Length: 172
Image (cartoon, rainbow, N blue to C red):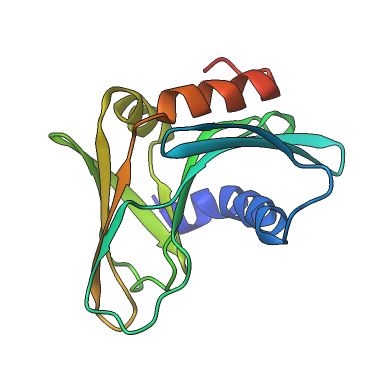
């Protein structure tokens, strides 16, 4: 099965969400709260509600000279039937067809890259692990071959995820 073709519509939807999220302080964004290492937000995107939990890494490792912002999002977009969608902005362009792994405790979750973004192959199991876990570590390699390891605290994730879920009317 060609995962590139299968996931392309989801990636396009995510990139639209990401562009809106990163376009500065949007006038209609609602800050739902800060929950330890996580925040929850909601906004309207052309009449469609978008809600998400977001966090920056507590630790980033790698021998890189330059790197952009890194953050992890778990988003809901009910109008597009998307919920619990896990994505990572890496701050660099990933190695083509490189292996990206998210680890929580003893569980590993495979991810795939599209440019500087990584997406979970299976969102549901990863979100469940995030709810139960303490830290999430993502390992990937840049297009230049630089190995990076980003560690995210999961402290407050459950509360932020529930706040985003409630705001979008999604079971969380």
